[in-house]
Length: 230
Image (tube, rainbow, N blue to C red):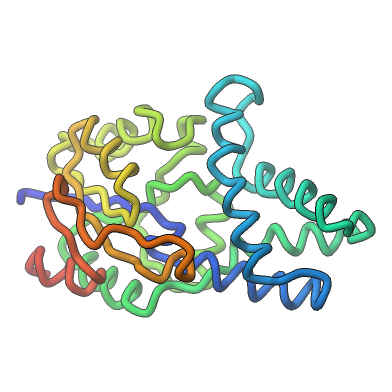
C-alpha cells in the first residue's frame, strides 16, 4: 500500500482505558464502588453521550465535559452524591492518565520512522495531549473530533485527516480495534487496519479476531510495523 500517514483510534486501540479508569476509581472512591464495574458503566455512557451531540440535543461539547456529566449520573445512581467537587474533577482526569498497551509505544516508534502518525480520536485535544505526554505516545500531530466539532462516526472527522495532511484519502490508513470505526473510515475512502484487542473490555465483550473488509488485520502495533515494512 502507498500509505503516507496512519491515524489511530485511541481508547481501546492504543491505550487500555478499562484498567486505567478502574485504577483511579479504586484510588479515589475506595470501597464505595466496584472499580471495574464502575469503569464499564462509565464507558457504556460514552456513545450515548456523543449521540446527544450528534443529534443536536446538546451543542458541541468536548469529551471531558461529557465524561463529567456521565460521572455525575453514575455517582447519583450509586448513592454517592456527597462525593466532592475535587474528587469528581480528579476522576475525570483518569481518562487523561491511561496506560498504553505493551506493544503500543514500540510499534508506534517503528511506524513513525516512515509514516506521519496522529490520533483520530473522539477525545478532546487537551486529553489526548496529556495522555501522550504521560504514556510516551509519539504523535506527530493531534487530529480528531474537537477540530471539526463532530464525533465519530460522522464523516467530517474522517474527512479532516487527509484534508489537513494534504493527502488523498487512499494514502491515509485508519487503525482501530473497532469494526464500526473502520467501516466509517472506509466509507470516506481511507485504508483500514483492524487491531485485535481481546482484553479491551476485560472479557465482557468478545471482539472479532479480524475484520474481513480491512486492508490489514493484526494482533499488535509491532505486527503492523512488520506488515508495513518499517
